[in-house]
Length: 440
Image (cartoon, rainbow, N blue to C red):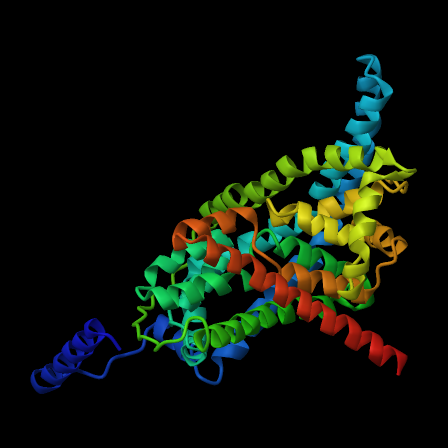
């Protein structure tokens, strides 16, 4: 404990002593906030309530995304012939038409069809809980765990910010005074899924564990996403514990958290800002990067060297290592090319598969499941891909933010390599354990 904390604790004790000697307080009647906090921050009910709310959020998201996804897919399929006809009237060369329609258009329509509906449902619900004042309660519930792991209690607040954007979560670590504890919070913030990774987790979970919501598998899909979020928090705590006893050893400091009262959000304002600042921003980033990425990947899929496309050569080069992690070469290529933004990993992956000669129209979630299954995907492939997406290195924006906040290339390099090593190790263990048990 440093001098500042000793002085603060002494002043607080003196103030309590004087208050007890000169003040007589009447029994306070509990208001709504205090009654809710008795449940939501309770030692015994706080965590079950938190997990229940998290499961409800994902249940609403997964169950509500499939039908809008099909409507969007049908709309884009209806629109495609008109765009081809327009290009024909403009006398566009055949290679340009193929590049635009099979490269750019297919990628963009897949992005919008698959990613927009889950985001349009998830982000407003998350914003509702944020405006309601629940997130500080989550930080309060997790504070004790971070203290035991050797971190600072404010790390829980930074982690909550990371659910929106890891770059924002890293910037929020400025509220931690101790450099050692601030570095712990920065290096472990990536293990909570951000806006860019949630669509991939939700989409793959819905495809392979809730493929049929109509068949009663929806609960399994929701359970998988909730389990992944909890697993990410546990990895964050474990990594904090390991770092606080090795590279960043030291004593933990204390802090006080003031709980804001609960307040009912303004729904119109919430929906507007959620749509503009989160859904459209994330989708816009995905579209802006996916369009040139679609064109680039289409080119690499049609430029050949020794009778093999460049994309196939790169995927084949990475395939042996990726197979050990439960992935394949195209998934590995997607994660490498997706460094600028996590939102584009799934679109790049799809484009890689589409460019192998199985070009199909943009479709619904069930069409996407059939496409992935045709490429050899199983539930184990989906699980390893979700685990790798959850735990791998942060996006380029977050890495640049870490470089700015730490002022060190070494800590930035560690922030990229440490999650990559953890993601690879976890996927390797899960892949080989499941295969071993399946062969027993």
